Length: 442
Ligand SMILES: O=C(O)C1=C[C@@H](OP(=O)(O)O)[C@@H](O)[C@H](O)C1
Ligand SMILES: C=C(OP(=O)(O)O)C(=O)O
Image (cartoon, rainbow, N blue to C red; front, top):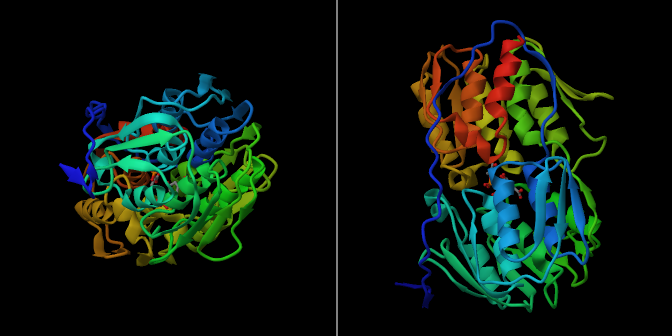
């Protein structure tokens, strides 16, 4: 078989199948009242790992996220020669080494690993192969592979342009200007930029196509590159430039994960309770103002105090009409709130989440309908008209954020039977324990 005129890769299927863990989502008898800590942001941990692996000195990550996605990133960088010590939960240490193959990287189901690691592999000497869970082979990757090829990296791919891949690194990437359609994922752009300072001519990425989602994640990429010493120009819409140059090793302090906190904050709204996330920074690279506005529109209050970020529910949950393209990770939890609201909702602008861990638009429509909600699916979102809900089986499709959505509904609807809560290990292995403790305390 030949992929795009190039040799197609065949590597062993490395997907580790877990036994599913069924879970009855606990129902809240009282308003929740909890103050809790969360591990670091998945997105910041992934970026800090990549930047540290191509820096010119050692780095530390304080309060990183230990979860499947970030462990896979650490393992992938290790496979290419970086020293990545993750023994201490609070402090990971990365010592960069010359990157080299042969190596194999299991991306699991992590968009960050499948989009951020191949550009780094282009900088290695030798061949680095990539594969992941069956669903990872269906997630969009072709535009990134095409962009890397035009920047001078030799890559074999599946016919689709996606996984499995073999990146034949030569120890150098010419870099320069490249055009890409990044409408399927902002991570294509982030991946090119994160490695771009180490390309001989740096990189200039021009997006052409429907709008790029997840603008806050692109700002996070630019911010963290600058913090590592890179010169980044993101002043022109849809164009990002990173000058060639050395990156410094540094101490990264990882913020708590705002998207991971979203279901807990939603619990404050559903139960009319109060939830505080400790350790929230004064200034954040995550879209906290947007979350504040969305939760406010749905009936909650968000405030930042000395203790942390607090969300209070008022007892009422209102419907929402919003374009979520910049915060699409929040769609499953907001859809769950919408199903419990006192008025209809329209969640728009998220066509690209059909390429996330599962087709989230279709999966949410199907599972919310199974609970009795009146849902219409459009190409780029959902219309949700609340109706009385009933307990029923709820399938997660290996998607951690589908499990979060089920948990939120379960607070108010007894008998939501989640087929596999262990899929939350992708970004927050502690989820079931933290959730049950929150509800038990209510
Ligand atoms: O760069 C990142 O860390 C991420 C970017 C977004 O990806 P998409 O732009 O593909 O939605 C987001 O949904 C994902 O969870 C994390
Ligand atoms: C879309 C997500 O993940 P990924 O980084 O795998 O794209 C997510 O965590 O909601």
